[in-house]
Image 1 (cartoon, rainbow over the protein chains, first blue to last red):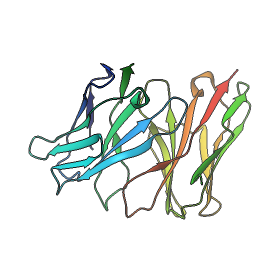
Image 2: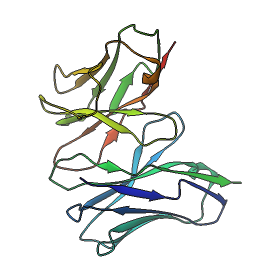
Image 3: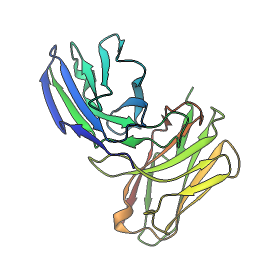
Length: 113
Length: 112
């Protein structure tokens, strides 16, 4: 089955700095890679996703990059703000397949004002 | 305009006393999932439904059961909660053709 590794487990940055979270996956059949943000006491919410036919996708201050050859994808947050503080989960799945994503273990991002 | 609604938000039960958590959705999605999430961990899939087809994860304890009486509602029953079952329980949905999951706000279960 799929295995998703996520690093780092904790990331502390100053407001205004950039933050990068990296994930690797094992199943070359995986072709859909979402990122979820979970704020304290809430359920995860999708913030951005990317499919395997695209190398990069941006949405304002967040971007995701995908390297299919190396089987890794990354979340980039620029100009971080205190409200970006949360736990971020990457995931991988096969679009149109089992519709069961495999989650990474999560990264706790702390943005210091 | 909440799309996946979980009740209650917080649930306290006693050791061994059955408890039921509920989830409803307004998205008309085919797939509904129940996840267990413990502190500082990723969500762990317990089971999911594709329409009425029930799929149990191999390592989900028998103590956990689920019902989906119709498209909109899904229930998680914990027959005899133990201290180790204290966790956040997340309900999620997906359309089955798209891959993104829509999560509810979760039910935080405490077992005394």
